[in-house]
Length: 148
Image (tube, rainbow, N blue to C red):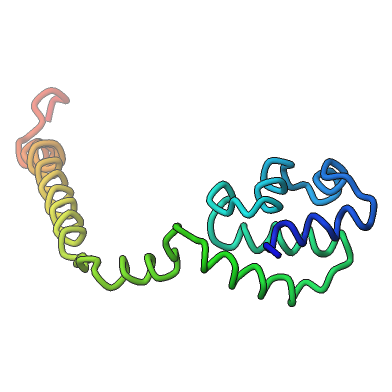
């Protein structure tokens, strides 16, 4: 007997409607119906499928581990969906490594420091130095206005 049909018979044996299961498990009736008719392609992928089966079995009081292993073997034999774990590992293996270099960041810091140094020199050269030069020249020249 197909997995989904057997699951449906267990639910009906307990006198529980599909809507009640959906309300209690918070799983859409669309997904529960797809599970009962073995339409695994209509279910969300990966761990979500196992979560739906686990919730369904828990609610009905069925042995989760037994039903999950049966689901896994049934879903694998009928699955047209690719194995997402294998896909992720393949992507990880074939990904071109990017070089995360700190060099560009340090060049930016060095340029900012150089700019700050140039700004400091310009402020000293054109603002501070003329004031101190003017004060020194005033002190060196005699003051004729006071009558000395």
